[in-house]
Image (cartoon, rainbow, N blue to C red; front, side, top):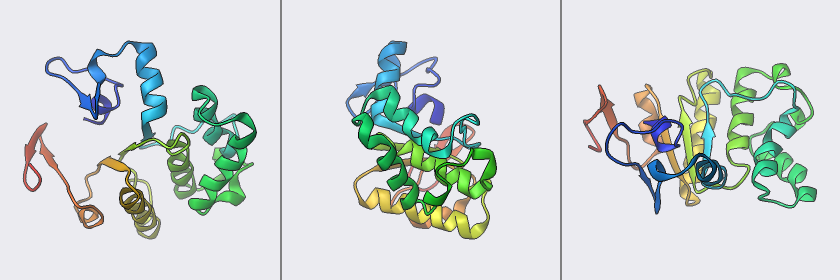
Length: 178
């Protein structure tokens, strides 16, 4: 579902509509432009580029989309890292960070272009319970600020952070929210 929603995969039937965009109809170029401006993706295994510093990883989406003036990108990256509580890690390579810090950096990167939609794949799967609670609280704040957060998770106790949850069983809607 996450891959369909973000245009990483395409449906074999039906359509994928995100707000006013028919994602399944976009060319690769259109898809890259739409994804860069409209969707922040938090991958399960971070996907931070090892040859870049943490700050450079966060600046990269801004560079690709030219969403902020180049002179503002580093300060924006530092501000996002500060929001995640890891601004002191900005100039380190991702490998120097703990798993929880890498996840926070990945969240900051997903927010780099200020997208209206944040999609997260198992964002707490590699985190200790305290860090997971902090990440979930941050996602809940994003929702309260008007962002849409779509998350795939196997952890049912996280439902308390959101107003609506949808349960999928074998690819079909089931349970609350269906």
